[in-house]
Image 1 (cartoon, chains in turn green, purple):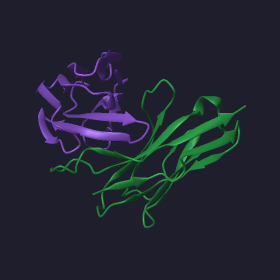
Image 2 (spheres, one colour):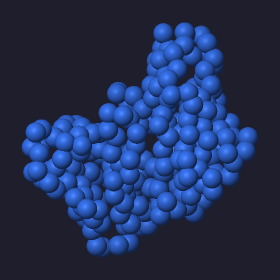
Image 3 (cartoon, helix red, strand yellow):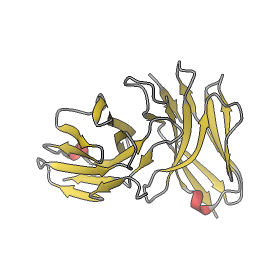
Image 4 (spheres, chains in turn yellow, red):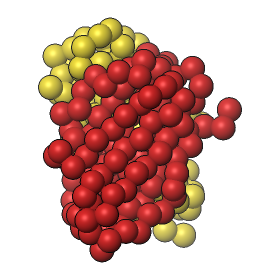
Length: 119
Length: 114
């Protein structure tokens, strides 16, 4: 079974500064995907960034980037130039792409990290 | 693309009543998921379907919960009878299951059982 652990229940950062959210996971699979989702107070789940395990290059999306360490099974999210609109719950998630069986195609989520950006 | 559509957005009911939550996935997505979110347990996968067939229902808490997917464009999650501990936000999500098209979530249904 796959597990995802987010060890920081809450984080805070000043506007315009940089913050890093931690995530570790456990799996015996070699091919998988990792995601960060954002859930603002509106409760909508929004995909922030995606990383494919077979790609060594870290994914980036504008102010969001990841530090993917496959051997260490670590997948942290860095938010640069934090904005007030970044205030949300952030979830790390893991997925084995479709092949067949009950373990494939579904997302396993961490417990989430509440990020507050202060003006 | 209208996204994943869930209804109702809010549901308040009394203990013992039947509750039905509805979901329309994105057209072309052949995976459909039901998640439950609570403060204590976070996001839990209840059940998911592939091509309208339930693949894994090990997350369904008990026999009071049932889910159906009669066709590719509609799914229901039913709780009968409902209990106060079922109060949560229930999300429906759909995907192609490849990872290149990750899960797309609906806006959720906030269920309150009094």
